[in-house]
Length: 99
View (tube, rainbow, N blue to C red):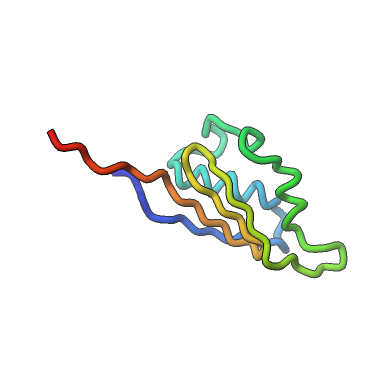
């Protein structure tokens, strides 16, 4: 059975991983795939370097605020927020057909 719940994860900007690394792992988790075997790259959907730069805290350490970017990856709606929150909404199934 396919999970239809929105998946949430928060990126730690003080940690060693890039935002796009956290995002790739989250998409793999939602898809039920190993992150190295997902069959896609983020480059197919968004510029990872630009995404990392967009939400990384400013040079003086001040966090970026009120930013959000939404895009689609393999049918999943992905929303990334400036506070590090990531929300992934799986593809919706249409209504069941009656026979």
